[in-house]
Image 1 (tube, rainbow, N blue to C red):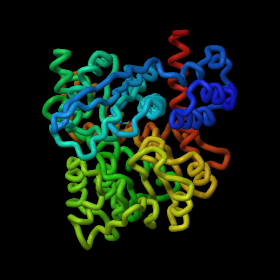
Image 2: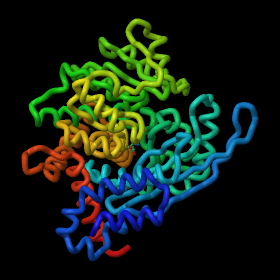
Image 3: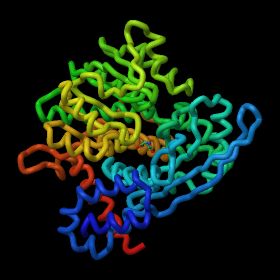
Image 4: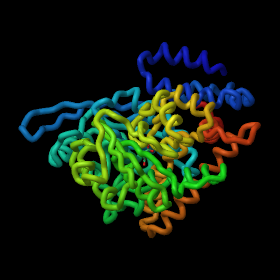
Length: 447
Ligand code: GLU
């Protein structure tokens, strides 16, 4: 296969689907060499089949706002690849959601889920519903209307959604409540990220951030470094940044910046426990303003409008908000201010030219599909507990999460170690995820 030829065809077929094309390009570039060493992949047209989703559901979601006005949004579920297990992946509620965004996320999810060592295929869904400024009642009515359509497309052994940007524990509650009523399945529901008293797994809310810090710890150890004592920046203040901040502080790092769409909040002495707790309050408020942190903790947190976390001097940066949130200029500014490593916790958080530049300018860089896989991995653990009608202790879940992150790191090292001994984590993660899915597809025949 030739990446350029496949990309040209895809571009012609899906014009303007920029995020999706970007995600496919990155994976194809990484796997081209290995792929061409396997004529059986080429014969089975594995790449051509793998880059297209199995199916996409699109539906109208109509709901009534607090003023009694009727609102209409679009809902989607992209079932990308089921070669290694039921479709699995989150739901994103954000005003910018498009099929392209969900196709990129579903494609990434397929390889990420393969890396977790658990039997999960890849999927993603969501809506262009904008949670900002919505009341709790509006969120509930929207979730219920969304599930009225989605429930026909999903099932515990078929497709298991979870949270993503704009969808946290509260939304999962409303969505799963409606699913139970419609499907008359009361054992476990069909979503992961559920509440602790009705089938949720201990540590699922924290898992993406915890897993990211475990991964960073391993990657840093490989180059003789440690998280302890490092100044780090996060972006956003949602569920992912919250879990990451908690674990980073436990491991002795100092979180000196978080951010929001309104600007950056600098915390020169490092984030404290009460500030981490306040991140949850900020998220639940639906105001989407990081300035609220500076208002709540004057003197400790300083807000600057219109700036990103990447303008704050740190040793390590963790993009943890949205795709393409770190540009080439941001990477250059980070370097100028002494930063040496970037671990993506957001999906495709860095722009391609930024990644390329960082890889050639002494950065330790690792991609989201490896770094943030602890979230979906713990969803997989939630599915296992549900299937067994059991619930494990925090220590048990944490131990498994540790093992899984170590296994992901090991696969990246196996497939990404370069001639000079350094690890290309992008290549490693892409090849490892690809090989697993490709072999499964090959063994299952032309379907
Ligand atoms: N949305 C998360 C991700 O990007 C979690 C998905 C899940 O738990 O299914 O991996």
